[in-house]
Length: 257
Image (cartoon, rainbow, N blue to C red; front, side):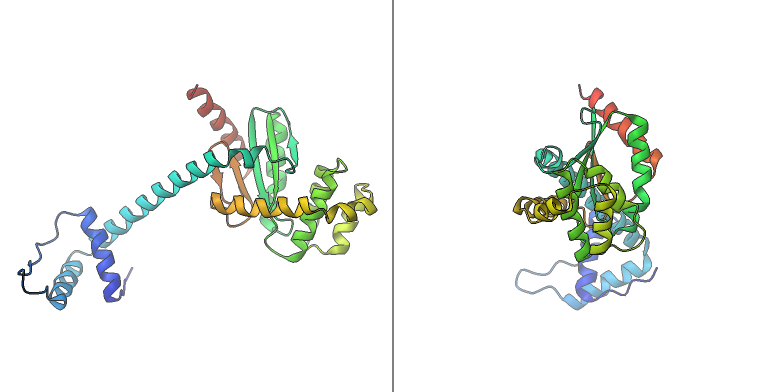
């Protein structure tokens, strides 16, 4: 890998390098009344890095580890401070086993191909376990029809048919439009007049907005996104991975008393 960094970039990288290595040569110290010769320092740094390029890799690895640790800490803190919004929001539909001992929170978009691909994997894991509570977070970020579908789904929840409608939308092939959304609603037996009225409920708009803000706090920028216990999963996973996370969550809770 070749790095062609500007002067300012070299100085930033040098600082990172100093943090992971004590082998840098001693740079000349300027006299109290004479400023440090910037060009001379740059030349010394350049010569040293060309002679010891491995220090760049060490610096970047150290930086990545530091950023990862900081990110994990921030995620744990975000989960702790937003647990109520994640698992107890009044308008967020609940599926799986409502009395389950593990809660899975899913952020999704009905136009997301990865969400559709993961849907049967997640469903199989939840059904096979039998003790997982699912919280659905409508997260329509891909298209205007995504938001229309999200509003329709939350309106369907008022008729007690959320999961049936959710499945119909998730198994729809191709991009959604108004006709496809309403066809899915009729397919699962929804009262269409009531559905249209409920889609305009300001509380539904507020739920979607709250989901957007919550996802941002948790660092979920795409779909699907899952929260299982103290773990945030930013992307699609398979049945076996869901099962492993369910078991790990239970084990962590048991170990923590």
